[in-house]
Picture 1 (spheres, rainbow, N blue to C red):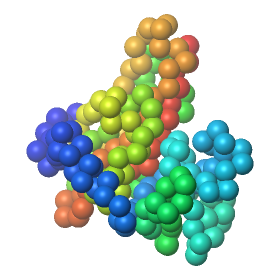
Picture 2 (cartoon, rainbow, N blue to C red):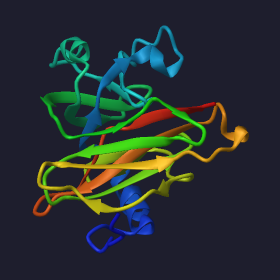
Picture 3 (cartoon, rainbow, N blue to C red):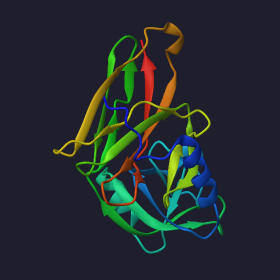
Length: 208
């Protein structure tokens, strides 16, 4: 596993850029699968018809049939504008792309066993995945960090190979105190000659 990170910003730079990106009325593209709005725990929230899976980020659209894309269970790029005129604020989608670029992590992990992380993206891209103890929302690179920046821990840096993937395993510590713990994962991906982007988020729960 390569630890060369010169092509990616430091965490402090990421956070500083994110704060600047929090200015209102900005265009934004978020990645992930669509989930029902009730995934937030609210079973009647008309202003939150959908969210990004494993994130409580509200997603809606007055021009795009999001139900069609929800039924695909596919990785998407949701292009639109961050709308603060509704409560809660959310992404007003104007265009959707179906993509193969993604982060994949098992939904469950077992104590003392390896957990596979798979990142798919443009060949030659530098990828930096990170884990956190919750979801979140921090605008960055006209996208958003959807895991909690306050508990974020990078778990490596490497270059996506010529086949368009980087896979690695991390062994879950054999500590019974971790049983039931949930953590979220997202990756920052910097293509060789394009703007860096943030992957879809994933969520994993540790079991015995």
